Image (cartoon, rainbow, N blue to C red; front, side, top):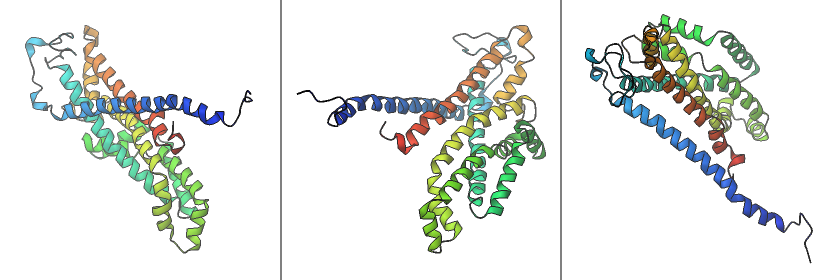
Length: 293
């Protein structure tokens, strides 16, 4: 006797046979994140072992195109562009890391403050709207100049201008959590708002915080390079990508295209790598609803 279509007995069997496909999706996601993370880690480690003093000049090899000896070519002082680019990428990633941490700390503090009372919530909302109305690049330049420029000025400038998006997300999550039953029960038991924020709210927003920090990375790196390119960021003596791109503008008319192409495409690859790690792939792993996919 044939079982009718949609028989309940068939559901576990169909689920069993389709589960390998779902596992392949999760395995693919883990593989993408692992390979991308290894690439970023390799760039950082490689840059740490590059001493700026060892990037020597060689005036007999000025503006040489890419070759097996110099895969990114050489610049107007005969310096190897691959070495300079790797050092600049590592510097950009470290600046982005510190700036992202500063942004995360500000966002977490303001997000938890918004859960205290309606007055603090109104103040946080006003502060977010205020900073969102100021162009990021302009705010970074103002902060960097006021702090004397350099790496510290750029880090603080980028950090204090990129917390608004994460704060909005945390504020919305906090509002939703405050309406839950266990929060009301804790209030009835006399628990303070700081206790509720520490033990109920903070553990539930850790995923959003982690994703927010990863997603701030590419913005921080691009804005650091933009400010440095305009001359308001790192010192011209630093092997930063912004400095390399700014200096290469003088020689593009002479046909030295590699001076801007390879550093620019390398910066783009790093930024896209962070987007690849911190986008849907990482969220798919951290989201409990996708745990069995």
